Image 1 (cartoon, rainbow, N blue to C red):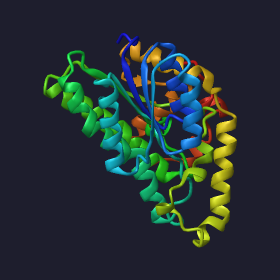
Image 2 (tube, rainbow, N blue to C red; image 1 turned 90 degrees about the vertical axis):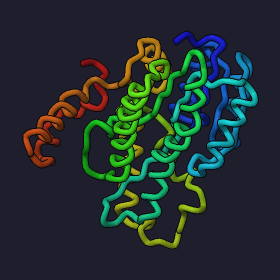
Image 3 (tube, rainbow, N blue to C red; image 1 turned 135 degrees about the vertical axis):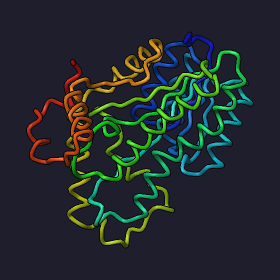
Length: 294
C-alpha cells in the first residue's frame, strides 16, 4: 500500500496505540479521521497533527453502533474514501469471572469487539467499491494468541478479535475481494494508556455502589495493569512497526516475538488435549512479554 494522500480512519486515536498510529500516518502524509470519546485529549492530538496533514476530528463513543456509523459517514463526506481503517479503541478489565460484574463484560465486549464489528460492517462495503480496496487493521493483543490468569474478559475479547479477523479474511477471499487486505495487531506489553481504562468508563457501564469496585480483586487488577504496562516496550517504535507490517502485507503484526514459545505450546497442548497448566506457565522467563527478538 502506498500511503501518501490516502485516508486513514482511526478509532481510539487520543491515546496509546491510536495516537502512535495516527502520528505515523501523518508522517506518511495520509489524511486522517481521528475518533475518540475523550474530547480534550483528542483535540490535543488533532492540533498537533494538523501542522502536517489534513485531520478530521470526530468525538464519538465506539460502544454506540450509530455513533460509529455516523463517524464513517463524516469521514466519507470529508474525504470521499477510506483507505485504511484502524480499529484501535479498547479497554482492559481485569478480575476473576466469579467476581467481575456482568456490566464489565458488557463494557469490554462492546468497546473491544463490537466496536470493530460496527466499523467493519460499514467500511468493508465502501472498500469493496473502491478501485484500490483498502487495508483494515484490527488491534487485538498477544492476549489473543495465548492465555494467563487474571483477565478472562480481556482474553475473551482479544481471542474473538483474532478469530473474527481471520474469518473475515476468508470471507473476503471467498467473494474475490482480494483488494481488501486484513491485518491484526497482537502486541504484548507496551507503554500504552490502557491502565487508565477506568477514567474513560461511560456512565452506562458504571455503578460505584457495587462492592466489587472496593474489593481487593479490583485493586489488585488495577495494580497489575500498571505494573505490566509501565515495564513494557516504549510506544514510540510501535507506529513504524505497524506501518512496516502494512507495507509488507503481513496479516499478523507483532511487537514481541518472544511470545512465540507460549503461543506454539498453547496450540500443541490444544491438539494433544492437555489442560492449561499454571505451573507450566510460570516456567516461562519474565522476559517473554518484553522480548522483541525471535
